[in-house]
Length: 255
Image (cartoon, rainbow, N blue to C red; front, side, top):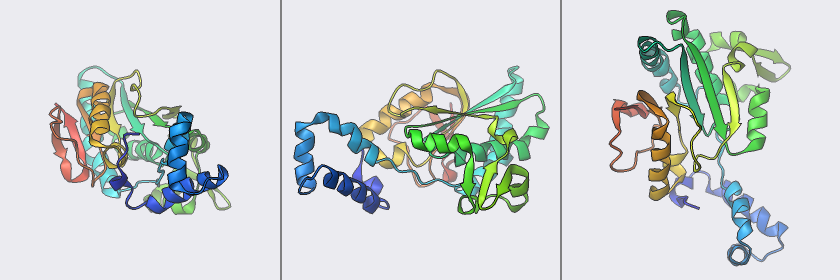
């Protein structure tokens, strides 16, 4: 499947439990029997692939990244858009899970650089391979635990609360469009100023799949656009189309 088991070191128990339940559903004796079952039933591969999807997500995960987005990255990209006569800053949140990341980008823009660039609007395409997570993302409803890194003064302005549920307000949701997409397939037919692909390609994919995926991602990133990967992730060797911007936070710029 093009995945690397080493990347699952923190979530192996979760994946093994999922596969174990699948083994029980099929009434097989164990993992080896399941491996033999897959050899005999190749249509089982997509089911196994789905069991390996990891969806760890919360608002403003790795808060320092969003701080630099507000101060450095989004203002620079917006200035570039203005200089070429553009009016929209296009962002792709790849592997968006239940939507916390793209909504965080929307909030970062509106509470930060937006006032300095009144002629520029933000448009975020948020994609994931899991339709259940996308349905939750579209509802924009979350529990308090997902909000623990949201700046305190933003919570009432960005969410409406009903009991224990916090719902993203419409002015932040309107900027975000959710779409089903597998990062291993052809990229969206758009050109992006900013792509966030964090804790996905360079954590769970093997090197060959990483090279293929980064090639597709960079094909839709505008020259001088920004790519953000996970802080602990590393680009595959010979990724020469990118230059360091804020590398300690996984932020790069296309040459």
